[in-house]
Length: 220
Ligand code: TYD
Image (cartoon, rainbow, N blue to C red; front, side):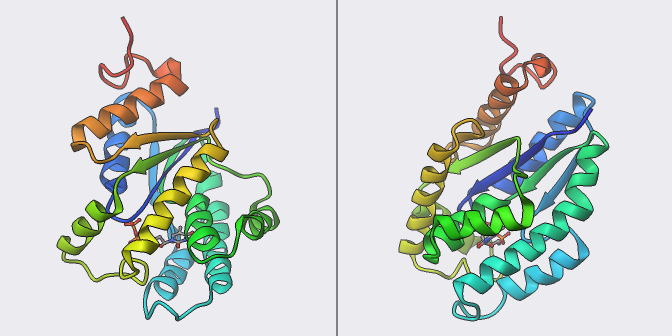
């Protein structure tokens, strides 16, 4: 059976990476093979594009060039890693995917929805995640987390708080445009509570997993 493609979206420092790792463990415990990956990146070629797009000053690329670089990386990622894994029955969990292009390049960089949807269609046709988990959190909180991580800031991390507020609102809009695919979790909560929200949503969407991922959503 084909695997499921689940993506994690939201602003910087929302805790997506940790939660993707936790979900992978829970699924593994339920006997499901998983592949954890990220965007931009995930394959050798896409990681090289990642360096191009994340390093340097904010004005290094125009919004459209940035979008095309993201989609060049994404196509390599889908063709070489994601699609073959799904075909083998593996569940693929990706830290960001196409909704990030809509939020960052479409909304925040001002390219507009239509342009991003047109590029998506041209590159990936109707390929979309089976489920997308949106981490909803106040950008003021997340910017503090990012600053205290002690890592180098990427071109996006160093944008203004208004930029990050736009991103936040953009993701909420994208979620309401795609209610069949999106689940929104309150990422202000403690990690264990966020994890519980996610497991609950997975079981709601895939009831055959009830009772296999821990207590959450098992029903009684
Ligand atoms: P990363 O350090 O992975 O951020 P995070 O840990 O928050 O996920 O950097 C990825 C950055 O790239 C992030 O700021 C969002 C941005 N991005 C886009 O602008 N468009 C895209 O299509 C993708 C996938 C990411």
